[in-house]
Image 1: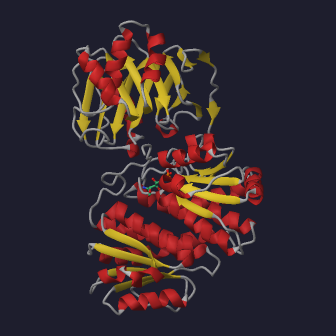
Image 2: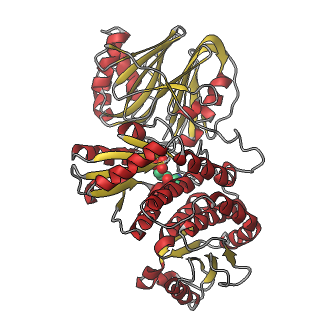
Image 3: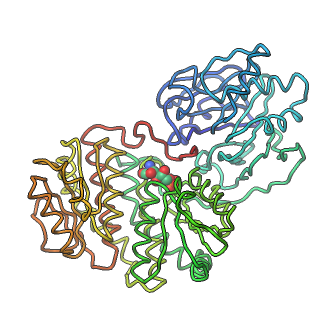
Length: 575
Ligand code: M6R
C-alpha cells in the first residue's frame, strides 16, 4: 500500500519521467500523489497525471493509500521538515509517531499534516542538528518503531537516502540512472537487474552510484540480481481495462507456467514434493484471492488422501499449531502481503519450515522462504487478481497430480480459450446480475472455493454485495435473504445431486438462477454457461474464469473504475 519511487541520474530528467515511473506503481494506492524534484513539492488528489515541468538529476514521488489522516493535499506525500530543507516519502506505518511528535512539538516543531509519516522529516531535521547525515540515518532507524520504506532528499543535494524495515524497497540501475521503488514493476521495462533491501538497511544514492550500509552505518556489499518478469505486452492494448486484458492472457500464462514446471522449475517443484512428503503437517497461509486458490489446492490434495490445512494469514497465529515438522506454504501474488509475512514470522519463531508460491520475483515472501516457486503470471496491474489466481490454482493442481490426482493439465490453456467463446452469453448474464444489489454464488466441494472467489471478484469490481457460499450451508440461515429475483449463481460440477438440490431450494423461494456447469444437459439455454471439461478438477479453474468475466462485465455495465476499485490497493503491506 502506497508506492514510492526515486530517481538519481547522471543526466537531468523531467518530472514527467518520475511521474511515469510512479504511474506504474499506482496500483499500490491511488487516493493522492506528490513529487519533490529537489526544489519544490507538488501534490494532487486523485489519479496520477503524467505531466511535467522542470528538470533535475534527482527526485522522489509517492502515491498514497491513506492510513493515518484522510485524503487531502496536506496529508499527501512528500512531507517536509520545519525548515523545508528535508523532503521524505514513506510507505508503512510509524507506530511510535505520537510519542516522537510530542517530543518534537516540545522542541518547537509544528506539523502540517495528520500523518504518521511527517515525523520522519522532522525527526531527521532534529538529528541533523548534532550529527552528519551518515550518523543521523542509523539514529533515525533506531528511533522509529513500525514499518517503513523511506526515501529522503535534502534541498541542494542531488542524492537520495533510503531506509527500510518490513515495507518493500528495491533498487535498480539502468543507463546511468539509479531508481529506488516499492517494487520492481516501477522499472522492469528499463532493467532486469536489482538489489533487494533487507531490514534496517540504508542506501545512499548519488549520480556516481549507490552504496549500502547496515543499521550501524557500516558499509555492506549487496550485489545486483537478475530477475525474470515477463510482461505479455505493456499497456492495455485493445482491451478496455487491464482486468479484461489480464483475463484474456490466462491461456498464455498457464502455458508458460506448465512449461516451466516441466523444465527450469522442475528441480524446485520436485524439492517441494519431497518437503511435503517429509513433513508431518502442511499448512497453507495466504489472503484474499490467494487464500481461495489454496482452498482449491487443499480440495485437490484431499482427493488423493492428503490432509493439508489452509488458513487466512491474518488469523494464522490464532489457529495454527506449528513445530519443527510443520511445512508452511505461503501463497501470494505480490509476495509482500504483510499478514502473510507476519504469519511466516510467527511460524519461523515456532520452528516451522517456510516455502512459497509467488508471482513477483525476489519479493519479501520469496526471500523469507527456503524454497520458492514462481507462478510466472507476469505483472498483474488490475487490483482484482485474475490471471495470478488461475496460475496459483494451476500450480496446485499440478502438485495434486504429482501426488496421484488424475487430471490432464496440458489442455487447460485450450479449455480456457474455448470458454472465452461464451463471452457474449456471460456478459448478458453479468448485465442482469448488475441490476441487483445482492448476489449469491453457491458451490460444493470443488466449487466451494470458487463460489467464494467469484463473490470476492464481484464485490471488488462492481460493489454489488455478493456472498460465496457452501450450497449445503444456505438452508442454515442465509436462505432467509432470498427474495423474488435475487440472483444466485450455482456452480455445478458433473451433475452433483446435492448442489442441484440446493439450487432447487433457492429457486423455489423465487431466486433467479444462473448456472455454470460442465454437465452438457443441465440448465436452460440463456441462463446456463456450459463449460467444456470433464470431471477432473479443471472445472473449478474454468468456473473461476467464467466468474471473473461475470464480475468484469457487471462492473463495466455499472461504469465502475474496474482496475482501481475504491478503497483497495494491490499490495497490502499493512496489517
Ligand atoms: O498479493 P497477495 O496474493 O498476497 O494478495 C492477497 C490479497 O490481498 C489479494 O488476493 C486481494 O484479495 C485481491 N484484491 C483479490 O482480487
